[in-house]
Amino acid sequence: MRSVAAAWVVLALALALAAPAHAQGKAPQPATRTRAEVDALIDKVGKTPPDWWGKAKPNFPKSLDLSWPEPAPPGPWDPNKNVGQFIWSVINENPSRWPEGPKFVTHIMTVNKDDARVVNRAMNAMAVMYHNLHEDWARAAFWWRKAGNTEDNLDLADCYWKLGCREMAEEILNRYPSDGTRQCSVSKLWSDLGETEKAIALAEEAAVQQGRPDIGYLMAGEACRHSGRFDEALVYYQKVLDAANGTRDMDRNKIRAKASLEAVCLFEAFDVKKVRPGKYKAESMGYEAPIDVEVTVGAGRIAKVEVTQHKEKQFYSALTDTPRRIIEKQSVRGVDATTGATITSEAIINATAKALAPRQPAKKK
Image (cartoon, rainbow, N blue to C red; front, side, top):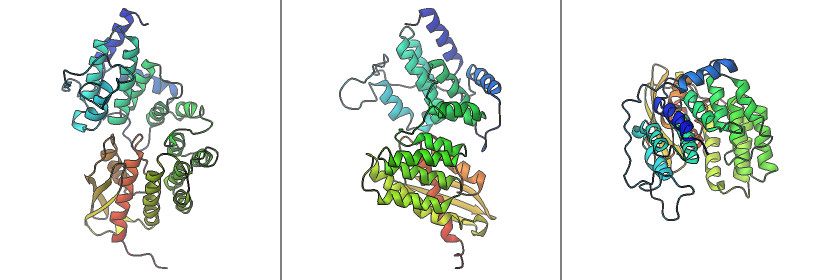
């Protein structure tokens, strides 16, 4: 058990911390940094408050059990009583409340300063918020390090990659000789790093050796799509559709494969310069329901991509991050899906392709 004095040190850092994420890690390609530079950046940023910190006010029901028992007591889902459920249903699902999240978790640390287990749980929650909601890679890494959650943490590897140190990301990834994650997240991150063959190999192993063809072949297809190998991507997506068995997510993964297969057929002909100025709409299946997208084109450029309707819940930053990436690239090709909200990102990418591709001249045979 951590001493009271040590707990207060943690608390002091927590109170000084919690910063906004918009300034860190937002470039289309991560700047290259050495290990020492990344370590210094994490330490410096992690100890400074974000510019929105003073304006964020925690707002939570008085009925919450701030002792945060885990597992949650038996009974129906109740975000008015359980801290984890409050974070999941109230904070995560409402972007206007995202700045409250780190401040609320800091309050949890204060209340439970003598309980090392709850303080550690709160540190991990802080890191997840900075990573998933704010895309603040430095502060996310800082808190996972404070919590000691560094050994096999794929999200921490993602932070290192986006902060510019490939070596640090690969150190964690190399601890995974196979990919047993639910969404083949190891394969996805290798694909993000540009290691397409490694990504495919891990995804195929999940499909064949682990008996998970739906997610394995789906992620092999995504790796091929990300690297522009569209013909191979189509083959993998079809394998998902042909699979007779798979994971508990099989039905959803088949829907994802079908949507991606249809979109990829449009990718090679995608040329925004051939699209007349105007607003174009389309939809594609997200995690919960179809996601509607409106794309504005002007002077041969994508001026705006907007999600106009959705029923996603744990979408994290995908609704703004994915449109931004499409606009930066002026294409749907090679756009990374937002970590933690891959399905939502895929749907936005696919809907954008569907919205614009029919507006272009058909390819001559």
